[in-house]
Length: 147
Image (cartoon, rainbow, N blue to C red; front, side, top):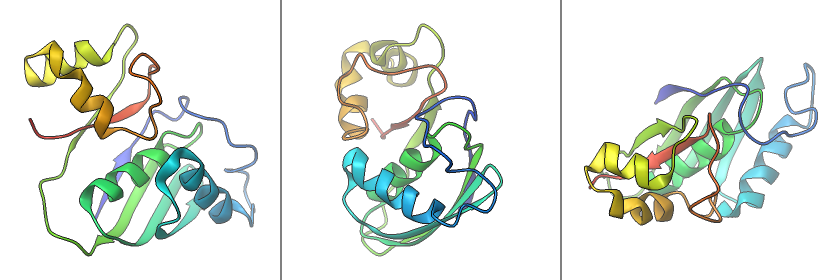
């Protein structure tokens, strides 16, 4: 369980998500998680200012990390409080990186793995949130799985 920081000004804009008193925020977040292609996991999300608290259970570390990124990569979200329990086998957590201006998946791959040709490993680790290896943006957080 941890608190993850995100670039508040980057990400997809969800209308009224962070409006104080928004009674539909949890449902909007669940819809967003489903819309990005992560199905309908057994998680709940609550909004507290620019922080989103995510609770529930998932079957794998990868699913947990993708849900946290899907929630964190929303404009206005500054942090995500990870309260998700993984019920499946324990595996090493991926590292998260924040895309900076001029980054490509190849450049990130070269920086973290020492090999630009491993960019597809990063792309695959971030599917379905990434639809194409060239469609990343500054401020976006990405999963970097172990080499």
